[in-house]
Image (cartoon, rainbow, N blue to C red):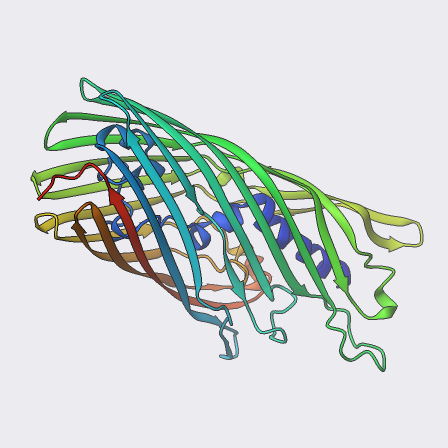
Length: 426
């Protein structure tokens, strides 16, 4: 039991730091980069005239005039929880989380445009009561990331534009979970018997995109974000256990690496009217590359007087997943009032045996709405998206570490403040 608790604790941390697929799976995949984009269901692969579009397709820079600077923030509030087979419910104690993003772009001349992005596209945090029944599976799972992404785009040439970018991604994490070690000795009742894992690492990748606009009323877009290899060489494992178990659970370091999945996006945008556009997108994430976790400990776990386990491994076997998006951008009053509506369907990549309180993933449906205005070059947008996770029940027979039912609704509130210095003067 002690060995299993140890392995589960380490594996969960490796999943959030090194796999980042665990952190980037649908439940922790952050794609709400701006309020205007959120209102359109992030259907932006064929561009919408804002610098945020470079995240979804870098070649969108070629279709924007002048310069843009914008700051966005999204607050996530979770409602839901876990219900065991006896009907007892437990709710996470996670506080609302705020995630910021920054985007800038500039059209240098007719054929060259540049952009700069700083964003968080996976992370968030889940915290459960410290004494709840699933404490040996998860008490706290948290990850903070940011990516610096300079971009350049060429065109359009005869309707075509192509762009490329470089990504430097940094991630830090903390995982806290309990250990099933039995009763504490007399006088040590306050010892929580937990494992606390922390670490950080850099990873690097690239993004490319192509757009083609054969007519004023239609534009096609395709983009690709490479998988990024994240390597942790000095992660820390800190045990807080009662004295009889101290020698078996020494504080130590670990190292591991994993290749994050590739992402491919495609979409088409239509302009039935000059002030109205509609877009349909699809996204494919190669989660199947995340088949296992493997990491090495520098001290190891004592198995006996002369035996230690130095390598820990856990099978994950994620599946490739797709997401479908549809969005509308309608400028109701020229420059002064825009309404945006969208809808997303998100496929679940996590098999039953990998579902746990650290990542209780499921399929999702997401309606979206946004309002925006512009005055003298400044623009301001607000948006709201409820993320409805379909109820999911898993059992020990399926291989899940905790049997029960998970429900969730995440309320996303977003705002954007920006400035465009090439607006038409009134």
